[in-house]
Each structure stands twice: as C-alpha cells, then as structure tokens.
Image (cartoon, rainbow, N blue to C red; front, side, top):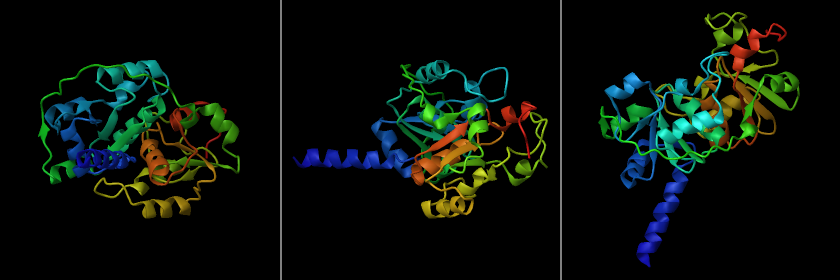
Length: 283
C-alpha cells in the first residue's frame, strides 16, 4: 500500500512539473524515468557538436513552406509526419531547449500546441542550466523509434491576415508586436521587409520582456507587471506577431501557461505577410 501511495505521489509531482517551464533538475529526474521526449531546437550543426543525451533535433526552419511568405507553416499533416519521424506523438511529454534565446524553443512550443500536443514545456535556462547540474551531454545522434503524431490543429490559437484586418481595431482585442522597439518604429533593417513600421493599433512588447538575461523565464509577478503596463489584460483577446512570429511563441507560453490567459492567438503570417499587401496600412 505504501509503495502504491509513493508511486502516486511521484506521478502527481511529475504532472505538476509540466506547466510550461521545467527546471534542469526536474528534467534530469524525468529523463531517468524515460517518460519524456527532449527536443533540441538548435540547428543541425549545433546539435552535432553537443546536445542533451537522448535529445532529438528539430530545426523550426524545416517546418516552413519553401516558397511564399517566409516562415509560414507547412500543412499540419506535413509537420505531424516530421514529428512522428522524430519519435514524437501527440501524447508525448515534451521538453524543448535552444541556444538560450528562447526564440526557437518558443516557436516549437507553440507549433506543438497548435498541432494538439498536450504536455509541452521549455527547459528553463536551456543548456546553461543543464550544465550547472552536470547533466549528461553528447555529440552522438539519438537513436529514434518513429511513431505516429496524430495532429488535431487548434484553430483557436492561430489566426490569419483577414482576421487581423477585421479585429485589429476592436476594443476587446489587443494586437501585440513582440519585436524590438527599433523594428516596431521602422528604424531597423530586414531584407524581407519593404515597408518598415508596424500594424496600426498594435502595441509593442518585446519578447525579451518575459525573459531574464541568462535565458530563464521571468517570474509570474514580473511578467504580470510588464504585460499589465502594456495594457494586455486577460479579459481581452490577444493576438501576437513579430516579423515571422518566431518570437511570438515564447510570449504565447508566458501568457497562457504562466499567467493563465485563455484567449491568445498567433498571427502566423506576421509582419512579413502584412507589409507585402499594399492595401494594408503600416504605421
């Protein structure tokens, strides 16, 4: 009886861990149990040099269409096939890490969520935090057993240009540009942008506002303070974008998993798509 209670306590604790962000110590415990898929969101070259033992490699750039607007997602079935080939199913417990910027990890986090994965998390502090606890690393590729990822796209967390056009001026909607202040103001260059600026009515909250300098995620209190100051309240619908919406992912995680916001969407086409249409105003 005591053994059963002990197992239940461990299982309950593990479930509590999965709330968007996971510490290196928690991941180390889970890795020993084998009940987790670790995903390196770094590029293939970085992965081949060093990665967390047991991690599989997914570069978010391989999940995009090869033509048209940069960084727009392939079909759900195409992405699901890639995930399955990496040994990931929609039921897997997933922990993602990147170089420490949280950009690639955040993007993959949101893509997994969009396709219907339930247990998706980001390693707090990434490889730096893993190194601090002497977590095992290797340069050898992980042996993968392919599986099936059954995609059930969640249309409630993705939106398109027509939706943004129709709702950007709605008083119940907050449109958030998570690029830098210079990009928002149109004073920073980008080869994929012909008309600099931002979508009218958008407010600027740089994605770095939810991240500490060491790559860890800020506390609930700190994030609440910055988003409230920007006028982003839970009673409104929130639409996030950046140049390509890669940086929108980590803010999506912070709002939904850390602050508990229920109505948050990512505009996948983002500013790259918006500014291409001459009929769309920019500011």
